[in-house]
Length: 205
Image 1: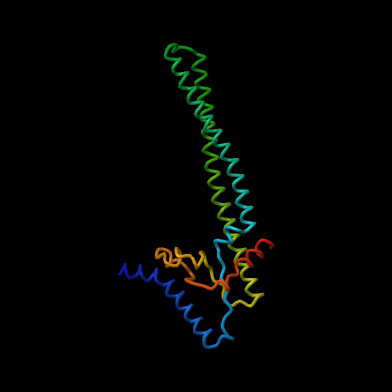
Image 2 (image 1 turned 180 degrees about the vertical axis):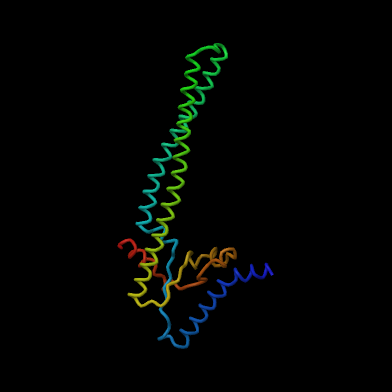
């Protein structure tokens, strides 16, 4: 039963896609003048070529580079302090009663703990920032894309706009069994591709 459920789960999108394709083909053959107006949008292209998304990626990379430099500096500081503490401990073996050396170790240990605490704080804060910022930005980007597609579809009389991810003419995408169950559209004519129009509208919005 589990195997049948597994097959049904993965087969459903394919059956649905094929059914829609056959239904639309039958409709256009019997009454081409009344057939639905369909467009397709390559979401991968949107995320790759959108100026807005590129700008966001660049700004995030700058923030990441700056934070990484700070963290690398703290790690270098931690390594240096650890080496200094070990060196002082070695000196204490020959002069175990040296007050100055004991004081230095105490100071270095305090500095080490402070640097470690700062590094841990930055790591946690960075992870939280990334999770919230990226999640929020992606949600906003998807909303913007959805809104632009909806506006474009309504203003241009489209009945359906379908999502595509790959070049339908690529042998790797047509015959790759590992991906076919996850694709929303199995084949389309380039005539229906409105990705460039959506991309232009998105970046000028």
